[in-house]
Image 1 (cartoon, rainbow over the protein chains, first blue to last red):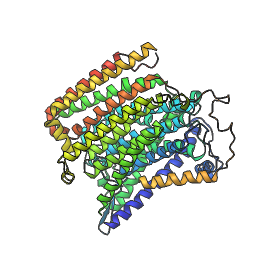
Image 2 (image 1 turned 120 degrees about the horizontal axis):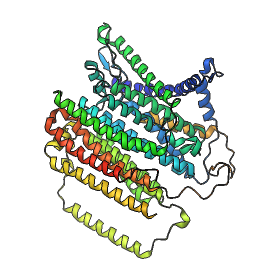
Image 3 (image 1 turned 120 degrees about the vertical axis):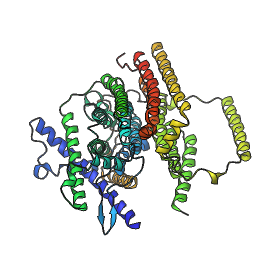
Image 4 (image 1 turned 180 degrees about the vertical axis):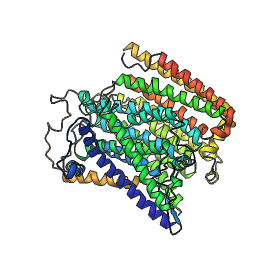
Length: 342
Length: 169
Length: 109
């Protein structure tokens, strides 16, 4: 038993470091991709291909002056970005990163917390993630920051409803809220994207809105709100706000890959005739590959689509996605009823 | 002391401490934040009782939704110190009197009650999502459907109130 | 996981606090308003529409939460459960239609 606890702590640290590392290199990837799409060179000074750029950026953030505006609420001002970063890191605990491996007859799962209500845990973390932005924006005592925080929180809560409804149609199929089981079910059956194309589309759009990514990056739209909720922030506190966005992107890519694209499973995996541990290692690599594809989609969309207007954003959330998600549940229910999958 | 007991005492301490902080802090925004901490510790208690669904709902609905609403309301209030009105004396006296009477009622009720802490449904899996769903959608069907009517009424009420406000201004 | 993350956050915050230079001036620490002198502060009331969105969000969120135990038991509850939930969702759709018809979510006005 102790062995498992020590292993879980190590796994925690590994997942955390991998998340941070991935997020750091996503900033590099995003800049490279943007430069490629716009026919530029992109970062190429720090190290070969600019590969040391994220480290340089991080160090720069660390050594910058920390500014706290005179009229702000000091502790809330510090709490905002800290909380935002904290919630961004927490969802990684329930994601099954692989099938697990066996050493000397002991089974080590590749999931930190195998809880029954994994999906609800995820939704809970998403729903409290809004406080980091609200506290940060409000405590700055700056009009731009307040507007940005209001927009961000309003947008996040609006799309959370459609996201929850899209997940309900999925849960009707799976019959469980356990993320590990949902992924394991997709080994025997098709990946759930086959049954839930509309649900996936809704979830994808909501994921864009929840992570405040373009085309839904209104909270920080620099042409009208300077920097939105992080206008007054500097040094690592600003770094946390920017960095947490990339972590959120990484985690939501992982969630989409595990819910709709089979997680670590890949087609014909049992026909390869591979041993347990080796297969498991390949599965984890495949999972990371799927995440990478989603991250690419996130960035691709950002550098392709223009930003929405705020009324368009709200209309899309409440008048299009919400009815569509309800319709999706109706259809899923009826189809499951008439095809006898009940 | 077992791990569960340590967790129980820690969460209880946290809940009571943050609940006190809610009423003692001067800034209403801090009050809201402490209230969120209180909700988290209560959700932790639910989790200890193996009521996982209730714990998740507590965080998603109370901490994640209702407190956002509270925070909006407080942010909408004018929090500038110089404009803060002095509370009138008779309001203070009335508050003390009503609080004392509530305290009296609570104390008398709790001392009379035969509620036994040890016999609370600590164990069992009645709080798991599956079992809860079966009970809710078979035995308590009517209250569940009535709840949806209540939601409809609440929606209409909210829209009505806010529309009236906008047409005035 | 939360502990690891919290440890990292606190350490980084302390580090940046200790490492960064501290040259504070009165004007530098004023709230930023595009370089011109700031007028008043940001503790002002804002549009009621945000408030309305928050209320509607609370209502819909609770309804969505109600549907999770049903979705988990969907296969076991069978046809009866399906119609039961359709009734619930029907009322929810009526509410949504009312909100849209009333123009409560129109931001342009």
